[in-house]
Amino acid sequence: MAALAGFVLGELVATLLIALGAGVAHYPGGLSALARASEPPWWENVLSLVGLWTGFAAAILVAARHGGLTALAHQWRVRASDVAYVGLGIVLQYAVDVAYAPFHLRTFNQPVNHLFGGAQGVSFVLLGLLTVVGAPIMEEWFFRGVLFRGLAAATAGAGRRGLATAVVLSALLFALAHGEPLQFAGLAVLGVVLAVLVARTQRLTPSVITHVSFNAVAFATLVAQRGGH
Image (cartoon, rainbow, N blue to C red; front, side):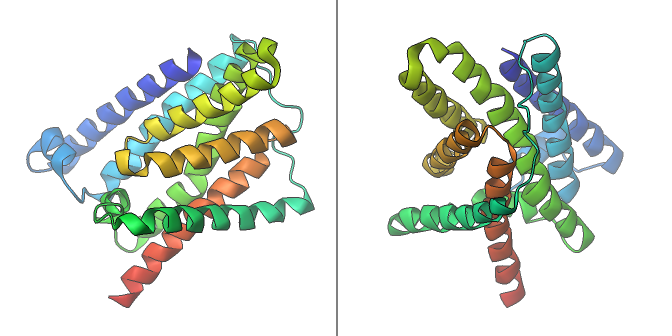
């Protein structure tokens, strides 16, 4: 319930911030025009992320203080062996690309273009940092640290079957939350892997590193494409 409320709150705060930004910037057509823009201004995407993460942070806080969900003992501990998760993220990104390649989806990269299309220079770097580093940290803390662990606790009585249910359900909700139908399958697979990492290691660091690496490959590809034009 905390995760659901946090996600809804995040969407509301994001909408309010974007509306405020549109007013300050005197964006032609206002909020409705921004919603239809294929390549919105960079500040719209920054405000959207900030608003969404505000809701995530609220959910994390409520789950810890009022939901009885104590933090993992060493959830942010970094080990030398964690470097292997960099490779895992790279492998996962290329595996998803290979799986989608036969379908020749022309709009597959539309979410990336929507996010970075209006960004140049400093704004492009800022969005890169937010999506490659900020998003994995906040999403892992929220989706795996709260949602998955909450589901796992709720299904603990069913043993391994309950844990598997928590893994799959949290992964499906993770994919659904991104609102990208074409990328749903790939995100769901990523969500399963990340939840399994948290279940096996009892830390968030491995899933964060894997997620950062996964996003970094997509960002590096975008940088290479821009450099080739």
